[in-house]
Length: 100
Image (cartoon, rainbow, N blue to C red; front, side, top):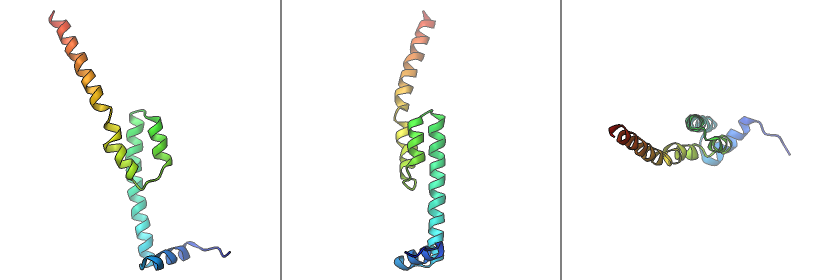
């Protein structure tokens, strides 16, 4: 079996897609930067919230930013409303105690 270098791989992919090898490289760079940005933001948010399981999942699973976007906008916000409601109850009970 012959070993292919990266130029051969980009040429082969470009040939299959009907685009130049340079375009293949540019597409890979754009996808890589896109993924890096979303992964970085999701990892940062999960570490700030001390969510170790999410941190490990986001670190190991590569979904080209899809899981990261879902985490940032959906999963990381799921427990937020419950906490704010309990905090409101605590604040109300403290103010009632002060009034008495």
